[in-house]
Length: 347
Image 1: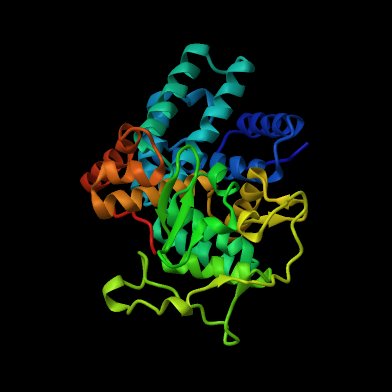
Image 2 (image 1 turned 30 degrees about the vertical axis):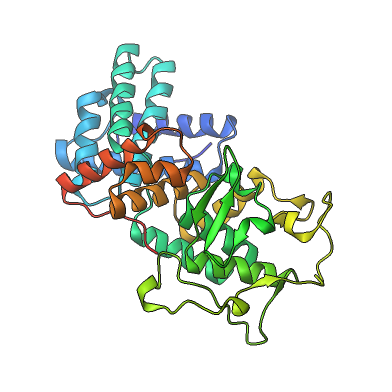
């Protein structure tokens, strides 16, 4: 059994939380989750001792106390993701306390409602600019060319991970700086130059693209950086093109010409949704960022909206049937503006 000695909590609370940690372990929770919950519990006890001048005990928990703690965490300048994580801890701990008979069911219901309202007010998870920077820095330094292309394309195009894994090599239009996404209906998605360059290097490594000996990729400016008006359009002959004699073997389970081959492959052929999710989680862990393919899509969508303020264009680029789903980004932008907070994707 874990042994705790937290001087900001009562002896009984220390023993109680030890039992909670053992309960988490028996349920198969990862060691990182146990460490995170312990850190959040300790932060709660420190805040309680300093604000109430008493040692913390779980019997003191109610919706008002949780709301006061949330406000204190936010006022201290902690990131929205940290606030949400601590609320998630509180929800799990209070549910366990209710099971143990330490907390009344009505009190637990009030606490769960408090956590739900916090999540609803927060809206979709969006990476902050410094988080985007850390993620890209890590994938650039640690990731293979395929992983780099995956992360950049997700962040710069907003495509669903389910659409990403269905892309073929021929769906990349280097001349126009676009991706052709065919599900649920065919649409063209702008592909910024930096992502197109990552894709070209990745395909060149596979022996599928003709690249100059210098390794320099000539591409048109197609959104993001550099600005289009600062870049002369390249000669069509200089653009990357599929090799007439590809040196890469045909991926497992694939037939036909290279144009129909999967854009992203693993050891067993076309990369799966789970495979892409593992790639993103791996590099997010290195960067100490809470990111998934869906978070990258939300980050792109929020950045697109803040630049254009156009919900119709956002729905088109995301492949949504209605503009209604994009209103969450408009609401988030309005709320952050009221709070005086700047939050946007970089690129």
